[in-house]
Amino acid sequence: MRRESMDRAEERLVSMCEERARMLQEQFGVTVNHVHAIAILIATFNYDKSPSAIDQDTFAKYTARTSFERPLLNGVAYAQRVFHHEREMFESQQGWIMNTMQREPAPPQVEYAPVIFSQDTVSYLARIDMMSGEEDRENILRARTTGKAVLTNPFRLLGSNHLGVVLTFAVYRPDLPADASVEQRVEATIGYLGGAFDVESLVENLLSKLAGNQDIVVNVYDVTNASEAMVLYGPSSSDERVPFLHVSMLDFGDPFRRHEMRCRYRQKL
Ligand code: WA2
Image 1 (cartoon, rainbow, N blue to C red):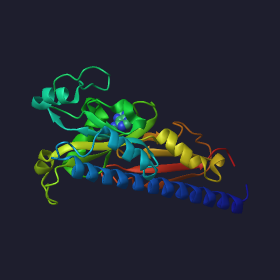
Image 2: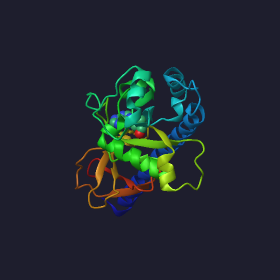
Image 3: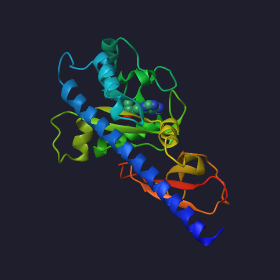
Image 4: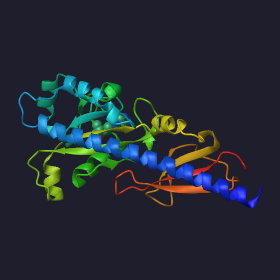
């Protein structure tokens, strides 16, 4: 191919990749912000009010009506922090026994995080101790020590079995000071709010609407560990013979993690 048209093809790839990375990062950002706002809502209306000002029914209605604010999330759920000595009382008040992700009764642990409120789209999370799943458990522990939005490794989600990542915010007692220490944060934690970015289907849907989509192959990777990038979106092997590869940086708001988008042409030019 002539030099000028090669240059133009490369420019086109760069601009398509940058556009997609910007859109994805933007939609991630608005989604995270809205989940943060729901975490504050729970802290405000659920703590120390008896009876609680939020129940499953109000949570389901509110989260369904505001789902347009969280375009990349398949739903949100709230898991309450329960210590072992509170378990019997909790289960008798709820009228159910908490389960593990394998759908068995939760074995004794120091503490648990059973889902008490869930958006209808993720109703399969109800009654599950989220600390029984490795990725969710790591997220819960990191969310409460940092007070920030945290993301998991890419993994296959419950329900859909789609590749995605889970977002978690800790919910604290409202008296937590802004400059709290890690110990104070852990002590003041009353629960966890989060949901799953269903990257496999929701990002596919987002990208499919863009012009030129048939011409390029898009991958998203978690590159936190530079020597072993983990695929979050796109085919796991792509044609290495195509001439250009463009890498766009992504910032999903978890400073512990690094993500990037890699774009190439689908076919040899
Ligand atoms: N949400 C949706 N699908 C999942 C999942 C999850 N976690 N884990 C595995 N598949 C209630 O951190 C608290 C949501 C976790 C929040």
